[in-house]
Image (cartoon, rainbow, N blue to C red; front, side):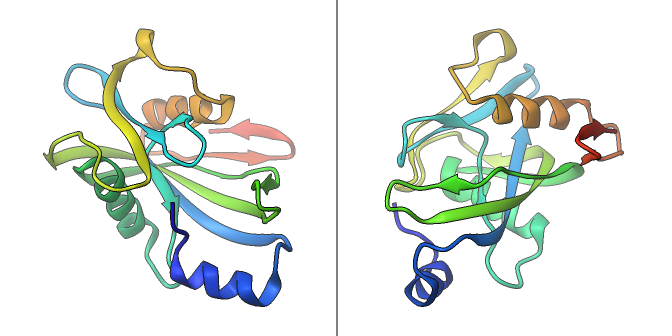
Length: 162
C-alpha cells in the first residue's frame, strides 16, 4: 500500500517523527440502511472509506476521491458529521502520525461497491446488525455520521458534543 507522494517526500526529511495530517472519512448508507465498508489491505481491519487529504485539497473533494478510489462508489457529501483528533498512530515501520479527522455523511450517486485499488482487500454493504469487527473509533464515526442532522459532533473538554 503506497503512501501519498507528498508524504513520502516529507518522511524523507523528517524520518519517523510525529506528523500532523488531515483525513476525511465517508459514512455512506444505502436505501436498505446498510453501511459501506472496506477491508484495509495494510492491516486487514474493516473500516469506513477514507484517507489522507492531499496538500491544498478541499476536504469534501478528498472524501469523494477516497471513497471512489477505495470502493468504486461515487458519493456526494451531505453533512460534515464530526471533527476529531486521533491519538498518536504508530505504524509498524516506526512512523508516528496524529490525524485531524473530518467525517462526512455521504449519499451514493453512482458506481458499484467493489475493490477498486490496492488499498482494499474487500468492499461491501453491511446492515447495522451484521457489521464485521471494527475498532471503537470506526463505530463512533459511523454513529456520528448516521445521527448528524445538519450539526457537527466535536470533542471539547474531553467530551463529545453535538
